[in-house]
Amino acid sequence: GRSISKLEAVKKALVAINEEMKSLELVVGNSLDHKEMCAIAAQSRLVMSTVGPFARYGTPLVSACARYGTHYCDITGEVDWVRHVVHKLDKCARSTGARIVSLCGQDSVPWDLAAYIAHDILSKRGEGAKLESIKIFDEFKGSASGGTISTLFTSFQHPLKKIKGRFDPMATDAKGGKSVYKTKMNFPKWCCSFNSEYGEFVAPFVMAPVNSNVVRRSNSLLGYSPGLEYYEVEAHAGCMSAWLSVLQTFWFATAIYFPPWKAAMMTFLPSPGEGPSRTQMKEGYLKLTALATSTRKDQIIVRLGFTTDPAYEDTARMLVESGLCSLDETVQKRGESGVVSPACAFGGKLLERLQHQGRGIFYSVSSL
Image 1 (cartoon, one colour):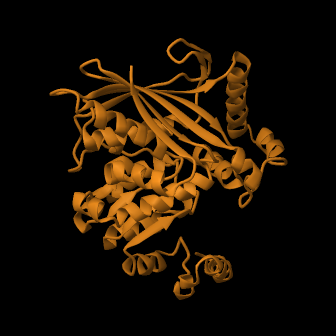
Image 2 (cartoon, one colour; image 1 turned 30 degrees about the vertical axis):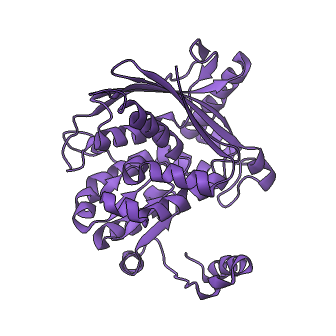
């Protein structure tokens, strides 16, 4: 961390829970100081990062981890930054054995796992069976923190430069070449409608472009299907709720490109360092229903859910369990290295840990 006093306060709280934490060493480092980040990576087996915006503060640490062969996990939802990390560090990380895994929080572990589970089950139902399409319907309740809002504005107002190359780095395979396993992303932009398959009104989900790219990365590395179709929307109980969701997205989009509106919004939105209360987090939830179809036309429904706030409380749990997965013997034997997705790095082990160690996490699979 950056502040020794804050680290000591965290350590004191941990000691109150477990006296063995008295021996916990504290390490101070500036995330923008390359030498300090290299020193941390060189003495560590694993580093977990919650810095952010990652495009502004995260690159020195992840670069050091790739260089020193140190496993790394973070909770970024900044796909363009991850794209740059793949482009610049994948080859280095593969050579040193570092397992670099971004997007280990709500962005986008649940969706990555849902697609992985569907692939794993359907691929076992007959010779040559593959996951052909997956349609995910999200039900979500949560509040954004000041840090999340700051990252959102930064990502759109100060976008990273486009990478020059023959293809998108997110579409690279395990050897760094262009993967033959492609993903077609399909989700509505600005309107809502009634979905007869799910039986509810649906609207665009603000994080669908992030989640779809993580599934795309997993498909490129794990080979779900050479023509995987990915569809994702947010489900609503009624038409009015769906349209309010669309208007809220439009409201934020207007602020991104119209500074006076942003200034007005920031007077009542949380500032960086501020976030939802414990009561708000307890009231939060995330429920995913994934309709998956194989190339043999078998169909299953994968349900995955979190009964507490996924954006903060369960994101912390997802990050910790991802980090522990990186040090797990069965994951180590898989030998995955490079800049990979959570599903590629940990497979079903992450879901297993979340179920056994988490609270209020449910998962089920049924056939259609």
